[in-house]
Length: 419
Ligand SMILES: Cc1cc2nc3c(=O)[nH]c(=O)nc-3n(C[C@H](O)[C@H](O)[C@H](O)COP(=O)(O)OP(=O)(O)OC[C@H]3O[C@@H](n4cnc5c(N)ncnc54)[C@H](O)[C@@H]3O)c2cc1C
Image (cartoon, rainbow, N blue to C red):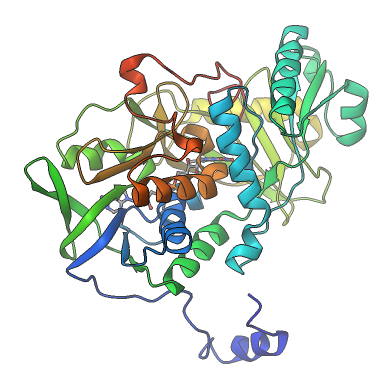
């Protein structure tokens, strides 16, 4: 935040932040907008930002039922990568990484994007062959990727037990060095501030309770703060997609909601400066700038709209963590939490016009929605402004599930094995 000097920070600290300008306004809803975006998570806010910035559409409202950051944008483990096999995912996620690389500068807000690398471990020769194939596909698409052998991995992360307790020895790994992490709530705040400054109204505590219709066409929404009309209504509510779309009469979507848990340990001395994923189970871990180990595993295996998970997943994640890093067995766990995941049936997202006239849908993010935040908003804004997808999201249609053109990485990317 360049506008605050060290001196003014000090002055604010001693004056209860009296002169501190709010990062975004708290306007009352207008009776109508050009575009309403339902959901003030990362994707809703980035969509509003890019609508204003790239397309000059500023008569926009973002409607958030709680406060900004209360959903998954403030709950994820912040891992960012573009190491996919299939071209639609590779191109889309690489576009996202490129936006991440300039995001702090673009927003004039430090999102703490840290290209510390993401290392996927392989535990069988077959898995390593798969990684070589995926790495080659990435390199052909101009995305960085390198295979590492166990000795190189041992030098990079000396605390890693390369034998993984003798059961799943590490036979190699695939590293994407431009991948990494970012500060999740700064991403929400940065996009909110950027959108607000371009004239977008961000309406918190404004829950959408229904859709206004003229025949099939969606013409607005009913909310806890009154009726609001719009020429275009875009839905980006991630794990709440099923419930919100039901309000518009759409009760069949290729999406299931599950809870995903995450964990952070007490702070310890820096010992690992990359993200690592365990390929014989499902674990992804990084060390935060404060020193805590931030990690997670699989979704809880039942459908739910509750943001609280169960102990079997906790036990599994902890045992995988200790198998990889036996030296951390006595480190104390500080906190755990959960978030609602919108799991699509092929593990890839949906960014599309429809399914009703006047409506636009963004969902199906599975484990990958944080890394997608910039590209998702960028592509959704294009789709809303032009009434057609950009080449980057052309494959992420809803009807691919009817037509059988799935984008399924089969454990290579967005579905469980890797994060
Ligand atoms: C524990 C965990 C770890 C994760 N780790 C990673 C990771 O390391 N890397 C990665 O890429 N992804 C990760 N993800 C996934 C990622 O966080 C999500 O895919 C992404 O944040 C979803 O998009 P969003 O930010 O827009 O969602 P959200 O922040 O959930 O936004 C949706 C918003 O819609 C609002 N809403 C819902 N219903 C209504 C309504 N009726 N009216 C108005 N507003 C409404 C909600 O309150 C919410 O704020 C993780 C998720 C979880 C839960």
